[in-house]
Length: 392
Image (cartoon, rainbow, N blue to C red; front, side):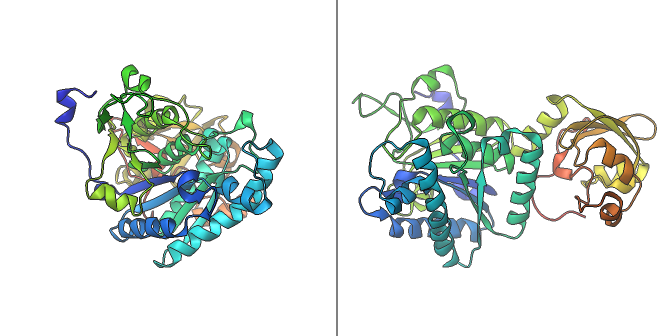
């Protein structure tokens, strides 16, 4: 149980967050006998639209592709072979994207489908591509609907549950809140189905070994994740600067219920998405090269701008796109560290040149920034600008 001190910590308000990832489990979206729970989905879309209208950026991580596809293909056995699950996902992904698009369109909200694999969140180059896509979609006020790409993922290279995927997406998108809608109210001191004396835990300020020991197994036949995966997701989310919420999604309007005081469990983060990301860039990653920039670029970066090729005067090192590099002023002082958007060989060719010339020089249309402001950590500052809005 949380200590008396933890009970004194203020429980967050869902409406106060600016960027929210909402994870929806298969058992909530699809009924084994009747199929899609359309009325439930429409009610959830109402809740999402209300948060969206209030200014929040929303991302949805939705299970359900295999559950929907197996019904269409008539695959009724409890456990599917890998090829059968991949085939069901191929059919179900189309249906899943369509129903989300239809429900959100009722609120004049554009839905976008994104299928991720494990490598898209773990390999830096692919991570940066996915992050840029999410940023662009959110900038246009679309709602990405994300799922693991079960048509190609195998047991060895997959998340296997969307709880941890949602937390990774939250970190990727600099979300400040991750919501896991489940078929339980939240965390208990023990699995309540097995222990009638289990007590509910409304607030977890810090994830300890004792908190981890409270987790049980998978809860339903349609779900791959249990409380253990939710605790693991909470560790990922809170380390990335996001609060995480476990709430009961079986009722209609589950997000509205949370905002009206329904029982749920909050996991708090000691930092924010921006500070967590900047700390990761400045203090965790090993630099692979160095850029020397002019005084104008130094001034622009300290004002919150991205680093453009025009401001670069010297490129050193054999770095690849996505690597961390040190950024120095002309006097040699370290200004920042950041994740570079070009390989060293390309950076040399475009340094000192206008962004509009990149395509002519390199033969392809790259990003206008050599390091985007979201991927910069100023030295002695560690803070910066979150993944939101337009740049220069």
